[in-house]
Length: 259
Image: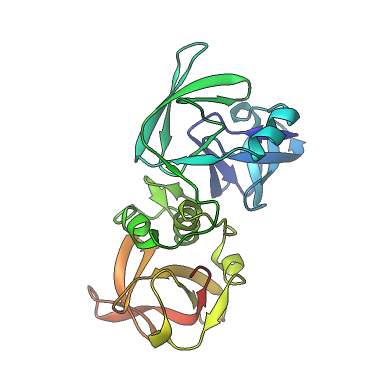
């Protein structure tokens, strides 16, 4: 069964329990497929990146398959405000939607989710039909100083791979969810001196596992989510934290995903 989230932020957990860690979030207007059900919890796969996890059944709403197919053929816009408003036109209840949320099938400010019409009030950005990196740095900087949150994808908390995924989403390219998955995208850049703004830098731990990702900026800088979304220096060794005078992350590889 297919669903589109009618709530602002739907937490997705590693196990069917409220005490389980949050591994990602489904934002308003994003679609997912139900794979299984257990004790009031649904195992889902996110439509955009196939990421799986558990959501509370009470927070889920099915959508008509025909509308789901129609929706897939329509231009999509993203919320471009930190917070905007969507008002249910049936009962006048309000959903406060966050930056990066999806606005499928929107026409003259009205969109329909789960059979319910919503009036959207706020700024929106169109997703480029062809991936475009020209505004990537501007988009990335709009997330600056957002606090780090494991599993987060919003302006109120975001993790490193969620940050990269959301920035690229605005640029028209859907990446997978985790840094260990994102590293399989794009072409390697041989030397950091050849890196361009928008390239992805991946970092590993002592055992060689990919644990972190950031976006290269100009002039030897990287923007990444570590404690908060921040800008640090980067060289062939890794990320140099100017506040501590130490390297915080070990560079593994740089990949070019968009040109």
